[in-house]
Image (tube, rainbow, N blue to C red; front, side, top):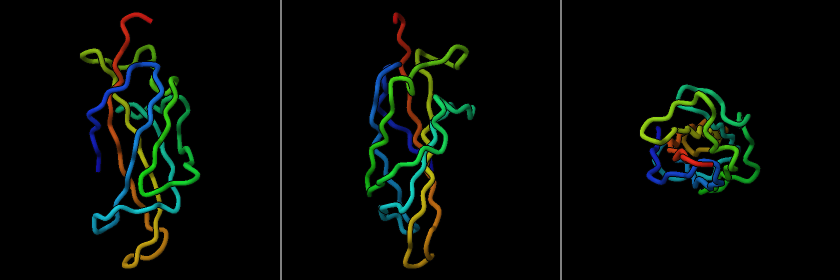
Length: 118
């Protein structure tokens, strides 16, 4: 399930994205493993951020993005002064009903405001 974040980040700025995952009942989980990928909506990986391991995931985890993660590349689609990013989470957790190492996935979509002057 995708979640569309209301906050926008300014191009070239660092940002912390607070993420959560839920189990089959909708309850928040603390993942055993958590990896994330940052991409454009077209699927191009941004700043080599592919399958980044989050070493200590919690019920809520802050994914730290660097200024280089929010730079808008040449040729990247910009509409109405913003570019879009997708933060994809892939995790595993243990479930009392489904067993161990159950996969969980989620996408967070957000916008990056393009700077006119840099």
